Every structure is written in structure tokens, then in C-alpha cells.
Length: 83
Image (cartoon, rainbow, N blue to C red):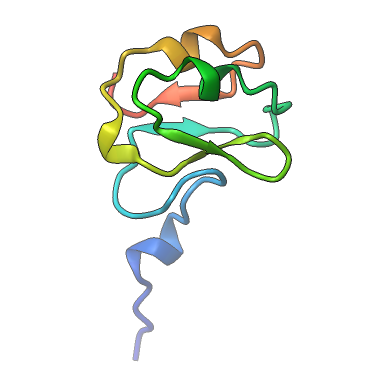
């Protein structure tokens, strides 16, 4: 008898994402220093700051892939999952 593993167990969501389906962005929280630039510059309020000031993707449906967050991230901690 074989055990079945759910998709979420095989590929857990990256820290900083909501985990509800495919996220538009990946945030590497271990690289992020919590400067808040991505949160401040996002024209669609995709992010909310956690208690350390690091971005959490709380409105992924609002992301238009404008590239402002990942182009301005000084830590290169954000990448697009679409482009």
C-alpha cells in the first residue's frame, strides 16, 4: 500500500506567500531585510507588512506584474512567478 502525498506537502508555499494557489511573486524572506520599499511602491497594495516589516502577499489577485517591487528590491528578494 502506498501513501499519497498532497500537492501542498510536496511543494509547501514559500514563506511570505498566502499559499492559496500559484502566487504571482516569490519572496525570499531570508534575504529580505524588511526595508518596506516594495510595500510602499506597490501601486495595487498587494503586500502587507509582517511584525518585522517584511512583505506578506495578502492580495495576490491585485498583482499586475508591473515589476516595481522586484526591480526596486535592494536585497533581490522578490521574483516574478509569471515572467
